[in-house]
Amino acid sequence: MKANQKLTDRLGREVALFPLEYLYMTQDEGGDFSHAGTLAMDFQGWGSNGRIYKCPYYAPCSIECIASTESANRIWQSTSEVVCPGFTDFITIVVAHDDTPPEIGTVLTQGDVMGHTGTSGNVTGDHVHINIARGKYAGWEQVPPNANWELKNSVHIYNALYVNDTVIVEGYNHPWITYDGITPTSKKLKKFPWVLYANKIRNRTFLNV
Image (cartoon, rainbow, N blue to C red; front, side, top):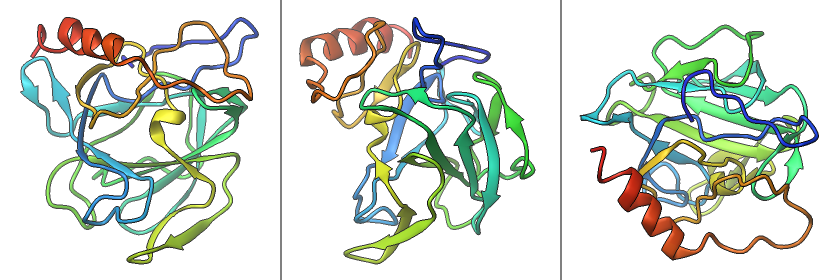
């Protein structure tokens, strides 16, 4: 998504959007490092000319900062139910490593600056760590094999956020989905067709980086 971007469905519900203009993953869910067993992902800042440090990221929907933990984590909760690729519900979002995180109690509308990639906490470089759960904040749990922490009710980020107006540079071949005006139902979603995904990369990424 881009700064100040807003998107709603035909019923006026906000559509949850990926919070960076460029999607460049540096550690996958279940990764070999701090993500082993979890659904968290790491993203570095990126732009049309390459790597960006202290890169801004934006509120994927209207959200409130409700708590914090160590490592400059901030826990955010949507202020209402939002439309996601896999469901419609409240969402809880944890972001980490911002060097100047906002105060607890901060309320943002969709598209406002939510934070910046950074190096606070246990990191090897400037990035943002994201973990998303379905529903209101329900606390944390440890998951095998390394007893790493993640939000209870965590979901795949590609099942929680649409990538409208996001350029995919490195998406680890996950089924990132663009909202096309159809609200998800209880039916199982089909994976994003590879040919459309490949076209998006070719037409919107390689021509801009």
